[in-house]
Amino acid sequence: MISGLGRDYLDDDRLRIPSNTVARLWKLLYDKGGPEVGVRAAGMTAQGRLHVWDYLFTAAPTLAEGFTDAARFAGAIGDPVDESIVTGCGDPQLCVGFRTEPRDEAWGAVIDEYALGVLLHRARAARGSAADPVRVDFPHRAPRNHRYLIDLFGTSNINFEQSYSSLTMLNVERVDPEQPYDPELRRIMHLYAQSVIDNALPQRTWEETLHAAISEVLAEGRTRGADIETVAHRLAISPRTLQRRLADRDTSWRREFEAVRLEQATRLLLDTQLPVESIAGRIGYSNHRALGRAFRRWTGQSPDAYRRAHHQRE
Image (cartoon, rainbow, N blue to C red):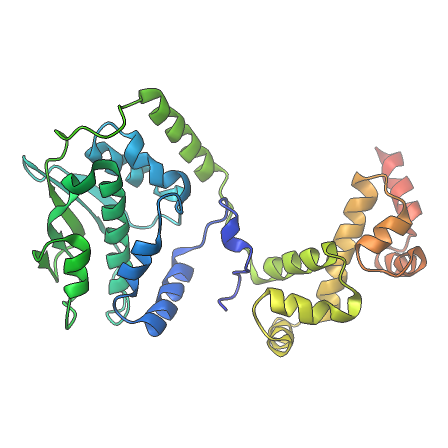
């Protein structure tokens, strides 16, 4: 497991995975799946899997403007460090591509092949077979056999060791889309995509991911004795690995577990009217006396005294 990525991480559309973490994920995929893994992953990225970004293509009046919108709002699906390029490249053709930082030759090619594959799938979703490319360029060296690329892009005119990755298509703007253009829909899509970008959250630290997993386990009513095993399973690592990572960070399971309990106890005391007995049960204590002893150790006050003092200050 890559540190900082919990099982729940990809379910939150606001969270953004930095490019260096994405690169590490792709290296793992390449090691397991080989050179064709990028194309296979592109085929598995169904319409809608990339959230609002997918629909920027079909909401635009032309395919060229769809690509422009996709480049403008790239931050809606990731950490935008690549330079997107949309050019006319001379009538009657449309060229679209992107420049990236140099990548390790052994596995970096699959990222470019995945990106162009997704662009092609979205172009075809917007304009059908009229969006089929007549030329495909990649910056990496040619693989031993690139039949898988010919099958995806529908052309043998695939060129390697070029300046950047790109697709060249014939002018498809004369082809009417299946749905009539709705400028209000496009405006709404732009507003929503920008809102997603503005409210994006950075990748969690490893500690934040650990605390989130502990909170989930507590919310499910797990007992204290099973917590470390259950949390380790939630993080897709062994309890021994979890203990080692805690030691590497000069902390311990007990310290991090108690930190989460303190945060939750404090929040529940201040933000709710729940009795202390109920709060104790919610965070894994057998009764309110056990919570009271721990809370005095943390704060020097009983839970009730802490709650009263806070409300008096307000």
